[in-house]
Image 1: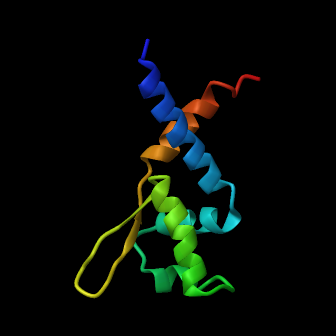
Image 2 (image 1 turned 180 degrees about the horizontal axis):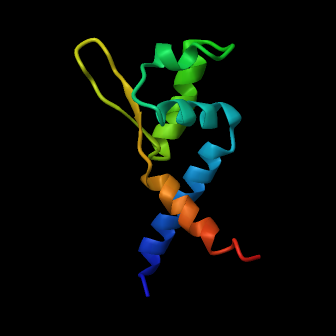
Length: 98
């Protein structure tokens, strides 16, 4: 059995993951990042929204631990972090039989 603090932290991470996935724009961003790193400009191209709007979506994804940004000279590419998706998938798997 895991301590309460650990379970609470895991539940908070899971809640953040599902909240981030609830938005179709954020799901599309994750789908794009699944094929490789991209800048905010590259991520904004297919959407009818501004770069600041895409940046707000990226912040939600970063807080959920689904996206990380690195710094390479002038460029700040974003990349997908799949671990939280695995946790969400594991949680859903327990309910698949219903």
